[in-house]
Image: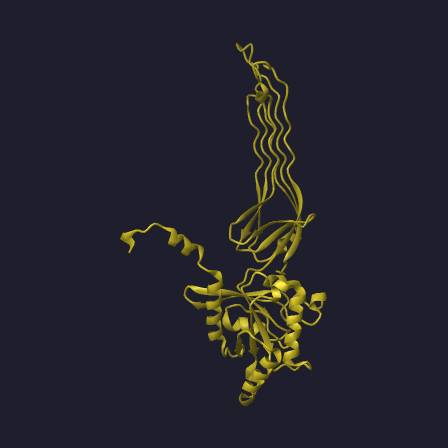
Length: 355
């Protein structure tokens, strides 16, 4: 299935059913009076986050969604049936915008979270509602209101704790294969990664984080060159960025110039993204003679004037990756704070029988 992270759909909520004008006609009831029932409410439309989905590809085929209308009321004070609500599953991490005003309607970040995107029409009133001491035979009623009609833009942002940056073939996909069970495509030509890959990295039985690999960036990415720019938005939710640098690159520019290009494109795309915590990973050290590795790394760090953490790794043979993952986990734990389960447990009243 192709990765799709944007889609436009139209939603039409159901209309409310009309109220009924009716009068009781029965033997031995000479003045039965009004008995017109109300209509039913129209069905509303909800979006619901589903952890089983990871793409918006389904919305390529179905772009219009309509909930059922409410039924009209009838005599005997019978209320019309309400229209059934329509629930549309979407991937976790979906942001919902009004396509006309570009207003953010909601952000679905947890499994089974629901968002009302189109309110169904309200029911009309039957003539029974209008009877009074001075109006004993009302013929008034109201029609149901129309349901909302909207055009929505769905934008999916991958939920990951750690995002990876780097030139094509810097070793990002190899790193994910080394530290997780994910198996992104790896080859000796650029742009083997065509859409984001996610990997779950487990550092203990109950400790894990999610890392995202996006297509490599090239110079001019902020102007639309290459593939990575359209996926940079997936890094905006992350706690940490890993800047992977190929120290053995065969490029004429060299690793320092390549690193500066990535940082430049990052800030051009978003200052917020450019200011995120970023760690430097000097990768492919296994291709450099051992007696030259230390000096080469020192020169790169000095030329970049890098002030953040630096790690020397070889993703291919997993050298240095285990220690790196533990440090990433510690950093994420500090950023995450206590989990919902931990907060709930802390708020529970003290029970001496459980101690």
